Length: 142
Image (tube, rainbow, N blue to C red; front, side, top):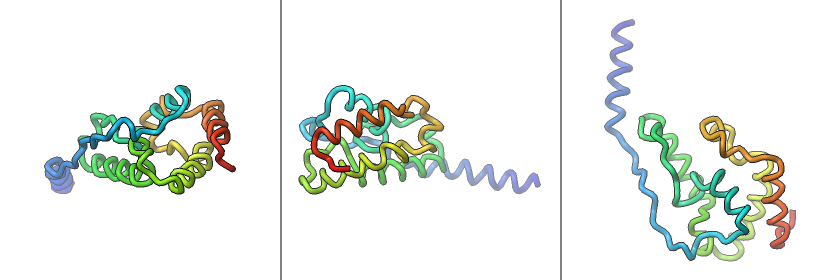
């Protein structure tokens, strides 16, 4: 039992030397999504950590193996949608992403696993409706 503990502990210590890059890419502010102030605030508080180049890396994101998982989630989020480069997307992609935001904002975003560590990111029903109403106002068809 003692031996297993030391092996696991040794592997944990060794894993700390395998760090992931947590630098945020610089992007032109002109490329950032333009929204009304209330929508921008919702996106920044609940979406930007995974869907922008403005990720705030918490202290636990520097501890392996958690750091690997968090880095992977952020990369996947940015690949799916990056608010920091929104205006570089073609119009067809923007429309597709707007429909996806409309669909996911009400049920699956932000994910429960993220909210568990970031209670402030949990959106109220009213905030979710604000985002949906804004999307409808700019022409997104549900």
